[in-house]
Image (cartoon, rainbow, N blue to C red; front, side, top):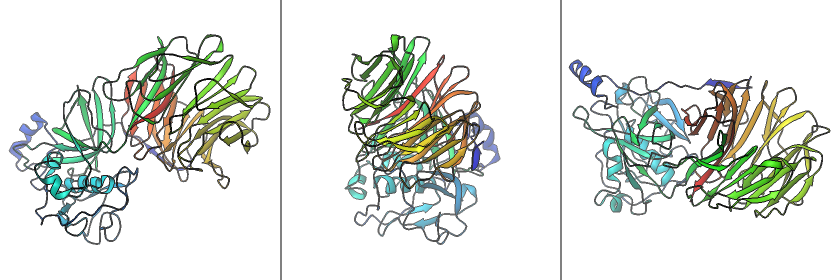
Length: 559
């Protein structure tokens, strides 16, 4: 049982169809299902004087969480200037969906993001998309209705007039083979004969397989009566449903792809979960597997490190871009691999005698003996000013020890006894990591990897744990398994635990250290199905494979 608030993850399909202008349209609309449909005011842009100058937000371009708008008065959703405004419920990386919009009983309120800016109407759908692009990407508002937010950024002289110093955004047409909206992308929904304004929203998560089928999750405003600001659109054969025409993508905003490995009937298979990439057989005869990735140019296999234990306890590793495996150690009992943000591999293993070895910087196997009498190990790659983080459980005492850096440094006892499992995560500044352990009685504890931190009880009756640090500041991402239920949270104290799935045999959480990093969650069901999701917690997962018996999870950030 978790300590703190528990939220049941929703698995229902959501969407919205507001009241129609005439009841006689209802049958036709229900048959066509081109949604989302809105009233005559939905998706409308303002008509406002041309932009004067260029004013960038305080913290643009790829921050994981955008700041509250400086023009809001009276708190969240600008109630001081727009009385009666409130949060709808949906929020993502600091972007809050507000209302009520015109389709929800509200009325428009004109707002300027800065003096001389093209005005936006609170709480139309366009305002949300423009607010996101301004706060996250440094894009000034420009004339657009919902249907042409995507088209108008680069249309004619708009870029030169409204965003002369803005980023080079790319328009991706819906239906492009191998392309699906990524978290942070802004979509447009086309006009219909019943709706001349269309719609727009911001993508928060996707769960699309290698064949172009799955779902994307979006945050929106003015989504109809009762809508809480969330929407889920189906994707079929690379076509996003609900009338989406295309989306704006910012190439300068780093893209994170999950890196997934699993043991299946044919052996160790892996995939960088980017559109069009399928799983490939990495090795046969693997008894234990590990994957690690971080920032780098993404090829077919990603800038990643793969490791496994083969026959006779041989420890093999290779880079994703190579076809050659390196035999780095013999008699390995367990292994761990990580990668720093500079692309340096970090390798570790425990041999059958209980000796813990590690190395950093190469795949040559120049290992250093770190400790003896070791039951299990954990490893987290560092980045920026943060060195790798190492940990182990002492066999005799059950103590949990950690240290930073390979070869040298002092081990610190962080828990003196009673530890059955451990997990580590590291950001790009020191200290920005996380450490956690599972006690012999099934209690999950976690804390920041700093001398001043104190253990916080997270949950009880736990059988497995996993940790990740999200983005440069190492924001916490925690996961645990209790019975066959998988829970996740994005904070230490107080943690709001989300039940992600049931019928789970193994789970893991991961993320990247670059700006704009996202949570990555994966699990294997008791039936052997491998499911993966990236983005907002409590969103749908995508089935990646069947017949899986184990899981290794990381991420690759495409530079």
